Image 1 (tube, rainbow, N blue to C red):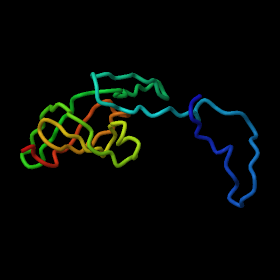
Image 2 (cartoon, rainbow, N blue to C red; image 1 turned 60 degrees about the horizontal axis):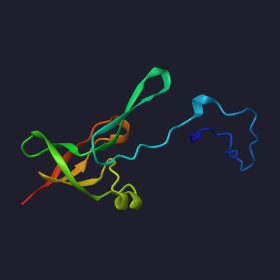
Image 3 (cartoon, rainbow, N blue to C red; image 1 turned 90 degrees about the vertical axis):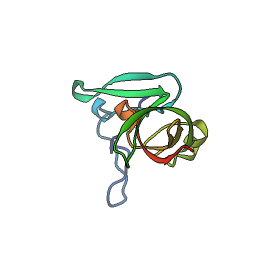
Image 4 (cartoon, helix red, strand yellow; image 1 turned 135 degrees about the horizontal axis):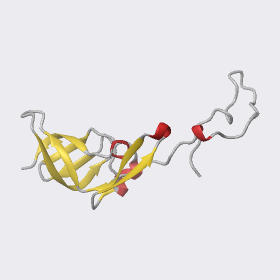
Length: 130
């Protein structure tokens, strides 16, 4: 069952209990997060509200690395996920989200895009590989 984003289950500002006056609506429905992992490049298309399409990155082994000093962007292969400050559990499982630190063939990279939402993996080089 999908997660729901409605206020029917919450309490009133006074602290009193709020009783649901209707059933759930489809527009209040959310979706589960796509946890991008290291592996073969795979995307998933999701139909969203208004017929819009959201591209979700399921797994990948490539990242677009931007060097802030030179201003160039190169495609680099991901070696491993070093750290993910979003969630301690993501650290252990190697899930890639925005802010994750990756080890690549070009050096250490911090992820700046939201791969589970945007379907692409971009990052900024934070240190060169020796």
